[in-house]
Image (tube, rainbow, N blue to C red; front, side, top):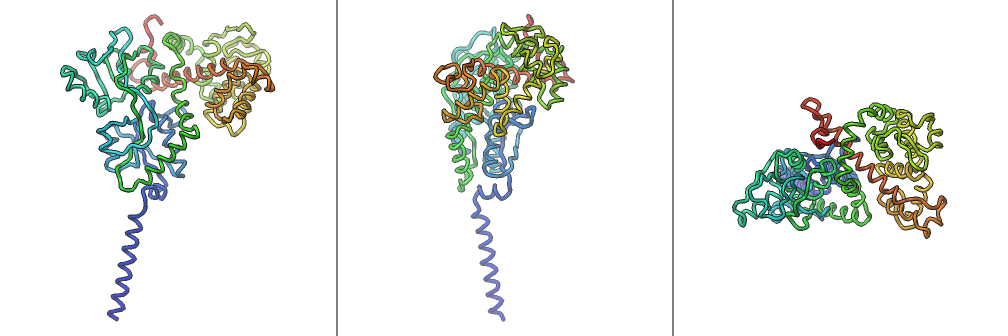
Length: 471
């Protein structure tokens, strides 16, 4: 009996050791898949993650979301208050990785393991228009310099301090780069240092910002992983990013957020901001009403209207299109518009026509590509857009992706291509620029109205602070 009990005990011990070993042998990747959740640290900024009109968005968010979908799991974000906390979360293995616009530096490489490069930027010295331009490191001495605490910019300033002993700066643990850039615009801060991708986005609605000089050469941004013996999740992410780069998905996501960043010049932006303040209020209720009726963001309809007429209800073109949404006579009749010069009718007719074009596109065309293509069709006609999609297919591109179709639109102006199409010649370059301009107007209007909500209890919306006295 005793021997039998001893044998049973031994078997139980062996089974227990097997179970423990099996648990510990489960890879990081397997654990993520088993729990059905990918936990990612990020930060709230225009280049990483933010709440858009239709939910969460951002360059790094979209990329992390795509990786989670690739793994077949849900994405859960952890958004600390401070940048420094993100690296701590990664170091202590409390998140699977960080997708937070992190610059690869030597000091950080000692703490975390960086994945493949997802973007290349330059660090830039930013000041306000009208102030003296800093052109070198020496010009920074004596200025009020403020940067994000624990950032690569603060790290670089620390390195330079050995050579420029009079160089001083302030680090903000609770502020992000966007806030500091807005403080430059407001004249509260003399100089800040930010990544070029963030500068290009913020300058869309703060044209007073100027770049003094590049604070660094090319820098790499990458996801940051814990330094673990098991590297299965790291390798899965590496393979995913490499495939995303090869099949164009990475470029498609990048184009979504940065494709319009340089479209508007200083003068154009200032005029637009002035019209938001002076002209838009007259028609805003009409935009909002038809947007709610059709289930389309009213700001998108307003952006189309601005591109068409700069919100002038009496606008008329040499070709005979007229009104706030610049409808042709045939389109107006199709949409039930009796007077194209009636702003309410024009807005309703233009919005319904846009919705009609968007619904007409094949189901395989998904948003946001669907929206951009419908815009192009609004300008150039559905038939010509279809021709461009066919050319895209012949060129080996994806006719369901705007990033590919926009490259084909200019070919509609070349006889070699348009003679083979159903609808012939069209001003494809104009249509491409048309869409990119509207995207810029839309992005700015989103930013303005979101800030408007935030400032309802604290003062006037940001437009008042952004506009120069002349407007």
